[in-house]
Length: 176
Length: 184
Length: 155
Image (cartoon, rainbow over all chains, first blue to last red; front, top):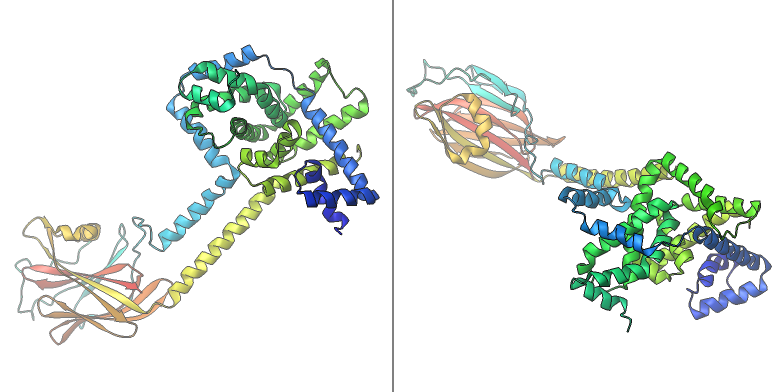
């Protein structure tokens, strides 16, 4: 025996004729014996009648000839390609099911970029931190390239003690 | 002998404009009624109804007959109406004015079952309550109430399952019932 | 009201997804097994105008050094375990030893030693961004100057 709450949830579908034969019979027999549920059924029927009257009573009869002229005018009117694109994209970006995908896709892209699955120019390097440096008595310069955020450690050569000399001696440390 | 919808569609796909005109004459009133139920504004409903058939004409070659023509045309109509409703909601003042205008012109309609004050109040409350539903819930109420379509057909039009149609109808009716309890 | 509730719910769901993904990324970060160390040995010179196409991806990093030519001499990659060492031969009798120390906040800490034969020339401890690099330059070689690009990727 179905309880009243279950039955009341099914009254609408029963009135619509959308229940199976067994379910329909179950609802019908309960309504016949339960005063409260019977009253709920009557209220729903009254609401349905009021709804139908409200929605259909004001609808005028549309004169076909002028209606068809309006449709024909649209068919014969040339639409620009961007009007079509706008129509299509408006639906795509405002439909709620799709609209919420937009921030989700942006979020996913951000995650993928941070994981470097999606190459993103300029995002890979950042300045290296030099915690210690020992050039064994030689001069060393620590430089930073701002555009590429690259750290450069430049080792000067002690020219007195070196056997190998470049034709162009090692330049002074590059400047940026 | 009268051609059925699919035969008319095929003629239309072959380029016969008269076949399309016949389809429009069969469904223009029904489509208009559904759209009016959703938009509650006659001018907007007329615009959207004409746009519906225009879009159908442009897409007729892609119609394969998998669904019936009327569920296909209703789908276009409901989608365009939902878009129009969203635009209406962004301009609430325009909508309010059109609602007022619609209620004022009720007196012009010859056949008005809501003759007394109580019934007029019920209708106003009902229309407002329907308008407070989401576009998706409004669509199921309108399609079921005005056209008496099955849950299967409504599901095809809205692109959802019969179960979803059932639960949306149940939710919408409950919402409407709560707002109308004093009148029922 | 409904819109606000819908937006709130979507934001909650979206945040939950983001947190789960961030957690997964974080978990992946905590346990890298080894470090892939790549040493690119480049000869920078001032005699000719030549830019080795193999170094195209490093062009922006090398140009500021203001040499006229850049040629790729070697490109070596080794997988080096944490706290282990990897040795790389550098042209001209030099050697570069790299010892990955730790991985934290997406940064790899490396101890690096450059030697010429048996003689150390430079010791440094550097923290670089995972998959990033730093440049070590200056030693002369064959009329030009050696420029080393040292990069590390935690695996």
